Length: 389
Ligand code: CA
Image (cartoon, rainbow, N blue to C red; front, side, top):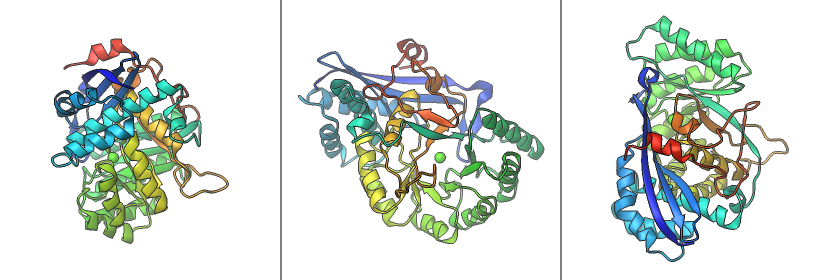
């Protein structure tokens, strides 16, 4: 495969009255950075780089630095390209923008390789363990920083009932914008509304130091939550390990971690029970494979983080299809040893409209595309509609 043409797109859509807040930020818009690669044979592959951070630097990284190197390669096989691009940017790009740019290129190259061989990415990775993946809805964001307890709880209740009516049996809510005492009320309300059988997760977006995280974790334990995501900042590996050693609720993290090297250290420090590499962030399909191997050797679960456009979601689904149970049992249990897919349900046309056929939840599951490569078709009219650069 020789790459003849590289196009990069920054897509943006304002959220208007649908804007929301995590513990860290206001989300007034959604954005995605997509790359489209065309081979000398006329095959087209798509990739995505980054999650919610600014998309422009990732695009610049490809346009100015990595893209010209890719065009100069005679055989653009993804793992070979990965090692070359990483080695050439190692001295200044071990985490962050450069790795997000490499992720986009890597996903697009796997898409192309799949189209070249007529096989899905998960097939090329060694085969599919499952044809559909149990989905958990991501929501429960804060709708205002002008906090009114009764209004917040009422809106949260309305939201989780809506998810339930859409067929979800698993849901993740946000924590960390409010004092522990107020967030505890949110946690308890959601449990009360959905009942004991509903699988619930919580995500603090690294809002806490380890001692406050342990206080919050006690509430999650008492309400039977399935994991506690990003309790402390990603750099605070001692804090992660302290929280994990004090709590029985499983600790999840890794969406802000990069490459096999970052995950090596994250695992070695005993930070988490569940690793959450984002395929658009951590280095692409090639690198998730390396991270998965380490996770498997440590008997840790991998539940990919997915918060991007339809392209990123397709890549995460291909990964989910290729992950073995961790560990193996005769009968799989979603989330406990079988991978599940994060299915963000906040308003985002870049996720729902970008592909010719939209991903949908049926009976709580999302089908893994069976077509070659990512198995999806990007609607160029939608790209043109949201492209800003
Ligand atoms: Ca998260």
